[in-house]
Length: 499
Image (cartoon, rainbow, N blue to C red; front, top):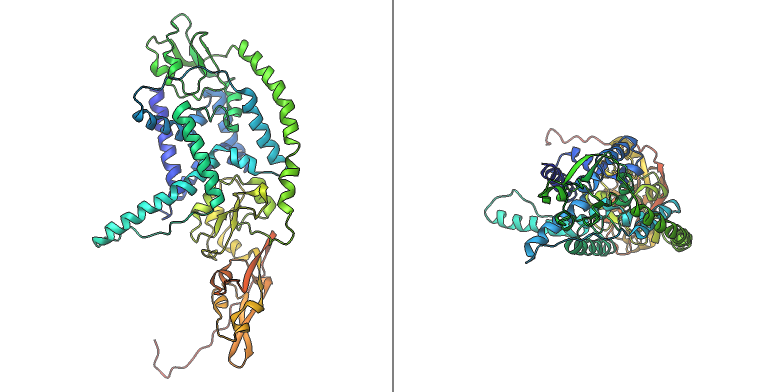
């Protein structure tokens, strides 16, 4: 029953968190967001002490249940392995391998050092939850939307309007390449080598694996009943069971319970007990000594390679972090580029950054107004962010949050340059930061007031000029805009005839 319970819970979490990323219609209720908030790295960065404690305590009691049930990338590897089994002529037989302790802890140190030294992209690349989020948003979602559009075409043909057509687009090619490469690596390793990614490259798996060595409940081998038949070893996707020595490497055990299910002697159980570590501990100590020296030297060069790059281009406009991010620095300090805000943004304003934040901030969310503008009353991104990178905002707070300021270049404005009536920018400004003032005769030109601008990008998006006569310059630190006064409305007498 242990394996059935584990598989059932894992599939529920995996399916719903995937659908939450894919959902563009608002069909799923908001409380599904809790699945993203119980992920280890987002909980840690958002300082969700209770969530982190629950995950740590559960690991100290049950072992790496986070990896086998809660982590979507971990469950995705199990799904990949199960799909691979249908295409194989022979069943894949795993075999015990020595732990790559040096590589595992090197990834942890490099990711952590990068985060502390201002290179958050390293943690973003290695966090399993964020990696899966990018895969879903950049690779799976375009296919999902295509399927929706196909259903819309079929249903509409029969006068059924259950579905509606949505735009299919790649939000950022840089993020797509990273996500697709990650997908290929994860699928290949899961197809051929089980949970190798979890036990080699995943920093969360390494940290929780260290804690799981001291868990109260473990997979235990009854030496008197075991005949070293290797059935448990060949079914262990973590490569952590040495059937000849009747020994288990608990740091790599993901509590999948395949070994219990496969043992026909009843020699394996999930029970209370402390692990005995002899040769394994000696090997780990030797690897740690080697790893510490290399890791310190390799991370020392990180600031020079990444951090300086973020400020290399002085003439480059300041990128705009989404409302609620507080500042560009706050976003970089807490975000792991899971792209949930990118997926949920209803107007497709939030995009994965390429070099807007520099190399250290690749794939992090940035506001761009090529496909739309930020809805004045929308607070979706602040509601879904699990990392605390985008703080929750009320609608009233959003109305006064100034993420950027309007900039007008009259030389590009067709009203000024070509003396042609336009006024599109003023019509789309929700705060009257852009208004039309008299210019020549009946002609009017735009006038801006940065103090009441919130940086929604409505003016920039709607400007018909290719070079954009009006645009938004981001604020490195978000400011509070001044309240604007509603324009006075005039009443007209229609002589008793009106609507």
